[in-house]
Amino acid sequence: MPRKPNGVRTIEVVRDEELKAKEGQATTTFRKFFPQAPPLKLYRTSDGRIGFQVAIALSPGDRKNFNDAYAAVMKVLGERRGRPRGSRKVQAKLRLNEDVYKALKATADKSHKSLSNVVEELAYQARLVS
Image (cartoon, rainbow, N blue to C red; front, top):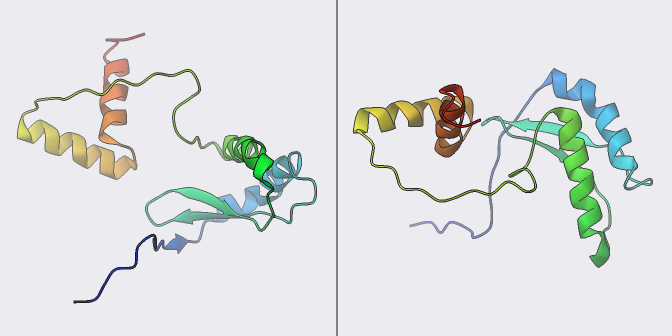
């Protein structure tokens, strides 16, 4: 049986002309944090995720600066990473009918969101929360 290497993830990158058009703006935003950075290469994976590739050397104190640059680039692209700052999540266990679960899971998979995000959006649409 072949062994699967630890820590290796393979992604399939798909062509996206819309992202290609935003590379200049994303590079300009990134260079506000790292002025000597080379141009960014934006990509979209086959499962819909967006990312960028850049080759820079970071010192130990640059982690926060890089995180801020990453968030700024994703804002330019209209994407966000993780929860908004100050937002608190609570873990919940739901007992759902199997048909309801399958429908929610299919919706989540189709929209490239988590099942929790789909349930949260439905709660806002139903005006259960403001």
